[in-house]
Image (tube, rainbow, N blue to C red; front, side, top):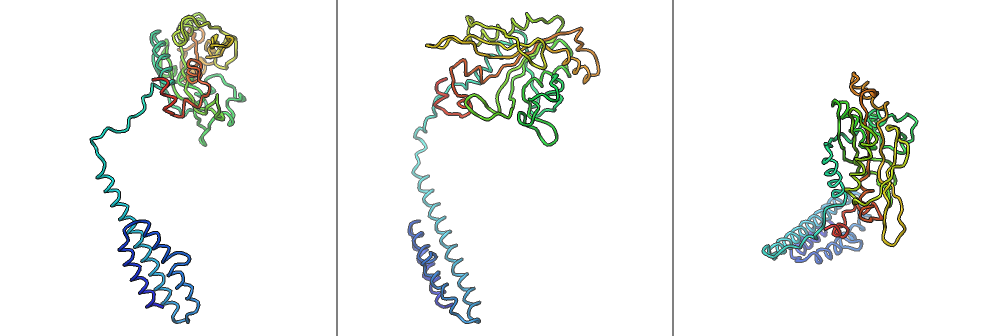
Length: 338
């Protein structure tokens, strides 16, 4: 059997060497190593050998299989490399490339730019902070009680060390007050995270733009004027705006802001676009505790805060019916904004 295997190996090696295509090599692999291949048939005869012959024949059989298989793999690689070189030689680098589709600026980028520009015209400056936050910055400092639903693991992404992915960019407001003296007038755009199932109106990561103004004698009229200017800048000067009483843990009084949406062919309807309110005194008290002073005394300063979801603003502005379109990077969608 050993001599027979040597002859088979010699024939196979020659056939592989002479093969010119991958198809020929595939046929040779079946001829020698397939279920009904020559080597497989020889292997079936092993059971008829004596005890002394089996080890020698088995070693020769394994060698034959390995050498044939390796020779086939090497030859396949050589042919593929030759074909790749031939293809590369046929490429005319002087020909124009495939044109990229012309797309516009992403709606979220447009909305962010317009909002920031409007607020900067009113004297707001940009501020940023970490997306991985402490519970104190995200909840405790913002007057959110321990039993509030937003603090549940079903709503918030927690790490094993107790930190979390911020659920809003209000955390930047707390950090700014910790590190700055009043007056403070900042906006903090950025990503926020919540444990929402992704559907046509929800994402687990979304973009917020929040603002904070703290100084002496800041009033509700200042808040109203600021947000009316911002929303008129985004949706047009004739847009009707209303403030509706609401509840947020970190502001008192609190409001949701609606605009009257004039959709073509439909009845006008009020759509909620933002939340806002006057900073709750408890927030200032927590900030003072962390600072170790009384610079943000509720008796000396007041302030307002607001927050807007950029995805929601973009969907209302451009009539986008499915929020998932904003994260799919489909050039057909983005071409509409060119």
